[in-house]
Image 1 (cartoon, helix red, strand yellow):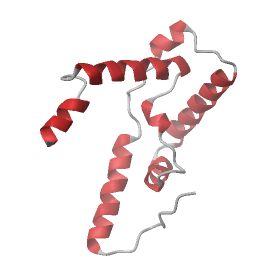
Image 2 (cartoon, helix red, strand yellow):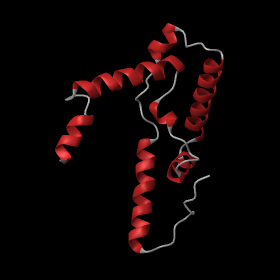
Image 3 (cartoon, helix red, strand yellow):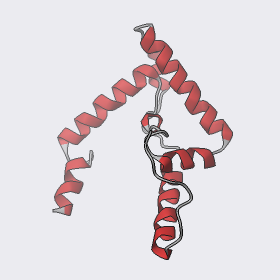
Image 4 (cartoon, one colour):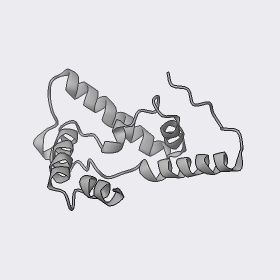
Length: 122
């Protein structure tokens, strides 16, 4: 069953996953976003912690991309074609830090320590 799930979401093996990834890539390029920009720090506190640990320049670049995307959306416009071609929507900047935070939380839970923060959703 696990191998079937891996096959379903692997764009290298599954045509539908490849088409989905291409569609997501096109939509993110139109606004100049990266896939990691879509994670909401208010929804998951692990994401908030991972963003707090990233260098300031990376977080500032994320905020700039989000502001630009909101501005373009409000204007019902897209990035220029030459700028869209330069975008890298699936270049990750958050996944490694997020995995580290999740491993630390799992280790903390396995050791029976109290959580650093309460998991409450807004």
